[in-house]
Length: 314
Length: 279
Image (cartoon, rainbow over all chains, first blue to last red; front, side):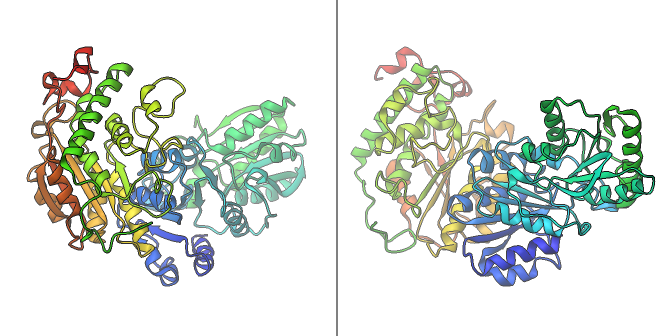
């Protein structure tokens, strides 16, 4: 996915002289072609994310289309106030690119994990959060937001995601069925869509047909498009992040507004820093966000029609 | 729009080199600041009174005028010490860059000028929001980089910082960047009144040797009296030496209202009715 977003920018770079790419000294073996394509419009800002964001904001004010690239926590939490004041308050259409969604960076440790990033970004006014789950979704998100006057955060996973395709969507319609199934709806965003599809395959072997709804732009939440896909079946929201993430919140708000009384479980990561080393799959399993755990949760909600949150209290 | 011949000079005399006219503008701006503070019961009076000459000198040498305020390519002025908002609004008023009526209703509900500088359609000359310290130099550096990418290194970016905000790491991130990139269009002017929010800078976080710090970051550094308008204009107008410039302007916090000069409290206490009378 990292490679793909660089390719997308590279393709535009030659035709759009407004594109400027700023990196916080990261992107080894990925960003070099972009440096070739952009020349002086490729700027290594050094290990100084706060400055990078301020500079990006004023480049946007000057008529450029700045991208600011780093590992997800460094381009969100490290420079949060610059994003809040310089980008959002000033309404500067900067594209933040954070690589390493969720547990992507596994064994590198919690400093590099991105579990609260989407929640924090979603708390800011006007900031769009794109959380593509596969390459097709990334392409669609990039195109949908290219001319959007709002700032945007692209939350990019390391894994490419399953090939479940993606229709053309606008940010406000970014919800679609990655899999059909009437017994339970797994609502997911980003890499969790792929985990949910694997969970659906497990459930299908047991005679439970799980639908998987992907929401590649969870903030602002595409409530109407999502509601149109609901069938009354129980819903499990799955997000590789903490409680309060924009997918969970959007799903809950939509369900409450519908008032149809669907059973619902919010499946998120425990809100704690893991003390023992784990690779991406291990961390996902411990958090209950791997296919087997998602299937178990879905199985339980189908059986009990319960309402609640898993993970947050684990 | 007529442009200067090269980087920042030689470009002939600034539009208003008349020190007397400048003194009159600064006196009017000070009176305006005092009345705004009094009417709105607003804090930051001392911070505003100390930066009056700096702001006027920057506007004097910049190309920021009513006719250029909405231009895409022009000089940029960023008040990073956003708590000096009243002084900025008062300076803009002197150059016809804000509707005086808006200053009459400063801080009244429903009006567009906040207590810390924000972007507003009511004053398109304002280039950046501020209020949280340590953001402005990066914003100015971003404008300077944008000018460079357009081949307009002749355009200037002026950033007014407080001494207190030089405690912020982000200020030095920006300084490192501007120095390394030799952003010659960038000028940082530090309102060096030697008093930060709770106590003298020397006690809280001594900045000295301050000029050396800027020089070591790749800046040309100039120290001067921040109330000497002619000296400010001269320093701001000096031909570029191919690197960013830092002007350390020694000022008196609360300048012009004797009872509050050089006091920490002038950061917090609004003007009194007695301050409205000429000294």
